[in-house]
Each structure stands twice: as structure tokens, then as C-alpha cells.
Length: 119
Image (cartoon, rainbow, N blue to C red; front, side, top):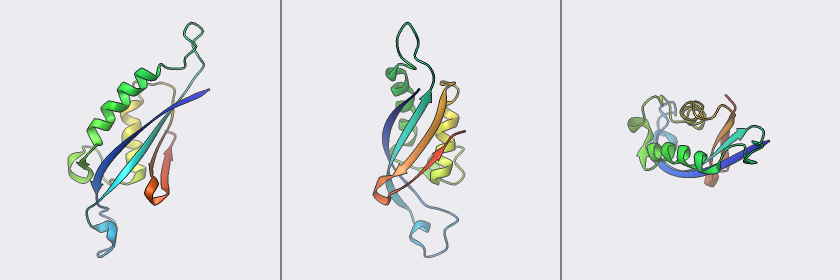
């Protein structure tokens, strides 16, 4: 069984690998949607895989580190602020708390694009 929790954050970035003159080479911002999926069997005592409040607390911490930041300069250990690296960055922060972490997805809905990471 899988459960998921979603959260949103706003952030600015640029892509250092974008060719000169390309819009992505300039600083710009996005609204990001993150979905954290946790897999496991419901506990026979609680009926829950993980209590959503526990997932919310962990997601709120991650959100606080990213929201309204300049990803290129403000976030440690994020060498290239791509969707791919954001997924890995979020995974590394959540995996120690959730052994059943199954996937992290990061989307830019206004661009109709996203990335899914399964560790």
C-alpha cells in the first residue's frame, strides 16, 4: 500500500548548463509541487502506514528550507537546481525518517513537466 502527501513551494533559480541567451540561463521562478509517497503495510493497531501528521511535519521542514529561496545560492548540496536534483535532494532529507519512502516527485504544473525519483 502507498500513501502520499503533497506540498508546494515557490523558488527562483537558473540553469548553469543552459546556453547563453536561453531564458533558463536567466534567473526566473517557479511554483513547485512535491509529492512524497511512502509504502508499507497498515499497522494492525492504528490502521495506518504512517500517520499523515508525521509526514506533514517532515514535509514542512523541507518546504521551509526551499520556499522563497534562490536555489542556486541558498541551498547547500544542490549543485544544479533541476527537477532531477531537487528530487534527490528531498529524498536524502526524508529517507532517514521514512524507511518506506517509495518516491519523490517534483512538478512545475504551469510548465506541465515533472520528475519522479525512486531512490
